[in-house]
Image (cartoon, rainbow, N blue to C red; front, side, top):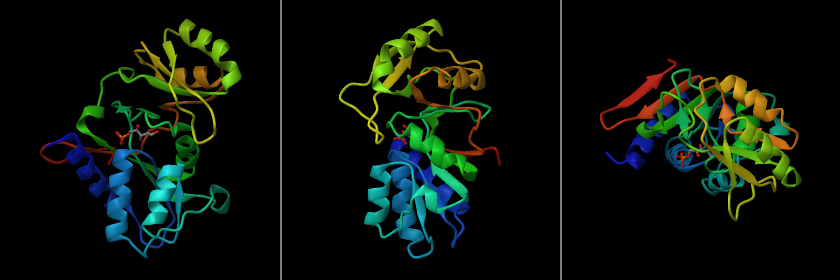
Length: 220
Ligand code: 5RP
């Protein structure tokens, strides 16, 4: 089975968690896109509103007839469904390969449950093989890069890219992240960092991982 089929299988499994009549938090990326498309097929007219983590997902949801509301209009919701670039045994994740990490962290923080949908390549023993995205305020690039190097990383500015919030991203290679909770806090404490792509202080509650044979469930 291709990784895209594994993503599709994981996305389909996440539909079981969708409660008709409830607001839904929706993530960003190719796996989230499968989820959105299946939501359109199976839940049209049964989801009163969605909160989205990117302009791209908002557009896709609206194209399928879903109402997308501003985060300011809702207090909380039951589930947030999104992909990840890596996850470990504690269900901590690296996210932000698609550049939507800041809105993903904000939107997921209001959900009771973070349902992460991934293909089998995303499971790792130790986070850090995937370059860690860090969204920054542009003027802070030199200072933030210096501290990231002191922490053991090798930051490289993502070329020809700004986030939905108008900021650059540094992709940081070289980390072997044995304590992602600590590193997330250290990086987010650097002046000029908007968001670090580690989702460890608030990990996923459930990971649905598509494999060639089935969908493996972690956290349930
Ligand atoms: C976007 C993300 C994505 O969830 C992550 O990059 C995984 O993407 P994909 O589902 O395309 O493999 O964090 O910012």
